[in-house]
Length: 347
Ligand SMILES: NC(=O)c1ccc[n+]([C@@H]2O[C@H](COP(=O)([O-])OP(=O)(O)OC[C@H]3O[C@@H](n4cnc5c(N)ncnc54)[C@H](O)[C@@H]3O)[C@@H](O)[C@H]2O)c1
Ligand SMILES: CC(C)[C@H](C(=O)O)[C@@H](O)C(=O)O
Ligand SMILES: [Mg+2]
Image 1 (cartoon, rainbow, N blue to C red):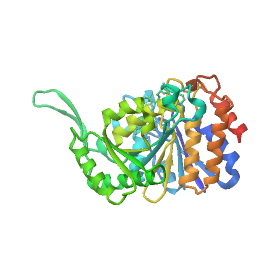
Image 2: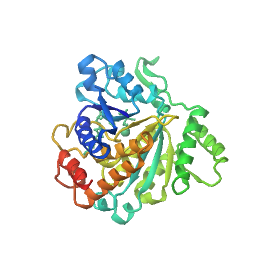
Image 3: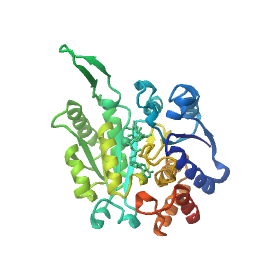
Image 4: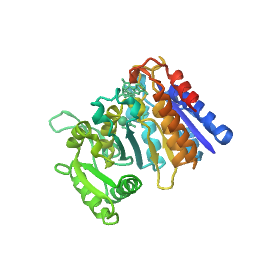
């Protein structure tokens, strides 16, 4: 099985390196890897953040393991050339509309959570984030108002089919877990959210076994801190899901802990940590690779049909943490490579 490795920028290559070591240890020769540049690294090498050859590899591969993109050197580029366009392009070109972001507290990390240990202990949720629509992909641009002022605009829209297909992923995810789905929107203000809520309620007729609730996104941000244990599965739009998942990560200990799977309708997937390229710590061996290692476990489970290997990796991460492995974001002093070695030792 072919895995496309897209390390990207900043800490991306550092966390991917440790993840590949773990995959070699667990899967031996069952996986072959082919690497390609993406993001700022690709722009610097070839003038485009998502070169055709990289996109071709992503399409050919059985699964994609992605590090992170984003490079301060590229901040001034026009939008289509910025590193972040590479991940947005991959999600859109490959039809990866369903982004699963599990947030759970490893028991050993109660001290690292931003929350009181007894509140944090209850965190075990999946945020199901729509990934192909919303304000991310609407018409956008810069124009001049009649009064002569510069005006930036980004159109937020969802059509009913886009909402229905992610709602079904939310209901199915809840069905495989504790049976509770909370749909998060801003239906008190936004037309897109009003449609979102209507469609989620319509789809719920097919899932009478699931307890559906609705919550406004501002309240959800507050509830994630007040009582995160109330959430089993959250289904939400692209922008809200982006923000809420970063917040949930800190409740679960660190942004360096949260993996993700971005899936199409046929099981093809891109797997990446939810964090970015972290330019502030890049090249210093400070990055926590566990979010990427846990993303690889999701890849084995969802795209490569190796659930036992996924279980082994997740158990090894828990064991490494129980043994005291802590990178700086978790309050410790282990380097990125030492964190990888702690997982290998646990295996
Ligand atoms: N999917 C992606 O590739 C992705 C995701 C988010 C941000 N980005 C990009 O990354 C760049 C930096 O963005 P940002 O600083 O807002 O977000 P970020 O997630 O890169 O970093 C936010 C903070 O968290 C820390 N952090 C992140 N990952 C960590 C890890 N594994 N271990 C320890 N600490 C970690 C960073 O040091 C930083 O202080 C930007 O260009 C942004 O667009 C890319
Ligand atoms: C880099 C950026 C485009 C991306 C997003 O907003 O989706 C990131 O924040 C993420 O969470 O994967
Ligand atoms: Mg994000």
